[in-house]
Image 1 (cartoon, rainbow, N blue to C red):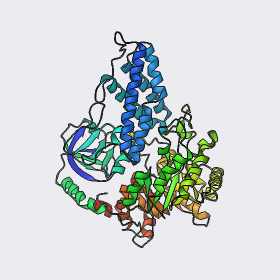
Image 2: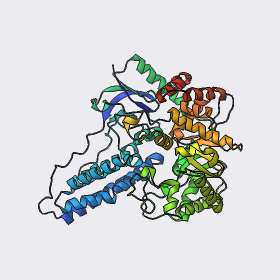
Image 3: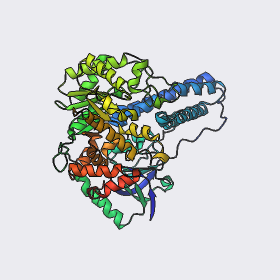
Image 4: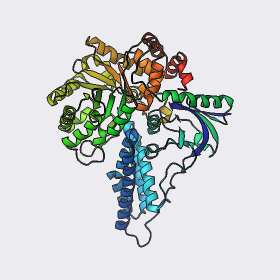
Length: 561
């Protein structure tokens, strides 16, 4: 029995045969020149036409998707029109290169540049290579790379999955995802969680398995077993039974002794919000507003923004909706707001900081939020991303007050915000921990890199201590200002218990994770959660912290999570 250990990123236990992602588009021959009779002008025009076709196809997919998938596809579509990519290819065509070879080399240059920048921009390196391959396929008149067509369900295996593929998976056909690369916060991981698909990443060697090989995938344990035996079959059957128990959520998160922990949803638009409400979310803990700004060369009007925000607010009348103001920059560049030439965008002008270089955009967004809130019954809270100091928090609170918004808050995703949470929370009404970025910045580990997956996990005791510092900072105020978690950490049922034990007030996650988190929380008292939090804090590393806590939560094994 062959076992491929990896990193479990989405729970579930299934057995099925695998299908490998098709081999990528072949590289055009080195030195390939323009065909006879084709001018550089003709080739450049053909290239731009192909790029437009790829953009339109990806945008059409985005229009049919929702949530994380929609956001990923919209960002990838933008790459097809990347100015640096197209101009670089046009220069090579002018020197006699074929369009296919030119876009291939230009894509390699842009991808390498993004990779070397690190952080968020390194994440876009894969997107550029995916777009490059699609443009080459379009120029050749070939089908674009994608998920294998199949009438029967299978487990999808790949070295890594492009955002355009993971965003449009059909969970009725693709039963689980396994990649040899990637990390716990990669596109593959995030989309798998949002679709409720079992997934394992960083399982080296799986991309060498033959199509039709039967494997067992445990998305919680992070294991892939070839030729599964009776034990694995029993586990898969058990999961099929218990998974149905996790499909319903009563609408209230609480511990065994009745301590209320509101379970909220992360959403990206009106469709997401409506789906989250149907699944029982008690409100919205993270409303990402970037969807209003993507695919645009100019800032949307106040009226356009207000109409979009109201669609989310109306899904939760009388309930809390926490909206994050525009988190532009780094992996979400906007032509009218951000500087693509920054040497290190992950540490550059992003989130709240864009108000320093482009004043007025944030004020108009707050005006739109206030306009939408005035026409809605939702309890609207507003938080700014990338706040680092108390002075920034005070400035944002002042802008909210000027717009008529009564509940300003901050994202804690920069370590300095956790360390100085007491002074920051003197200026605002609440804080929400973005554990994805907080982990990445605390551990100095790019969340997209498979080799760093062990570092880039919120189970790291250092990250948990930053969470504790944030909670203690809020308590120091003596006013009971709430601290929530809206990062992916909240969707891990075992880690959710630890977060509650650390004193976190609310948890926000992809709506599909609500039921599992609620089921596990219901099995522990608040004191037991505090004991488990202490176990995790005192561990020497993330692996030990996770194992310690899971050993004390037998319900995880019973539920297959």
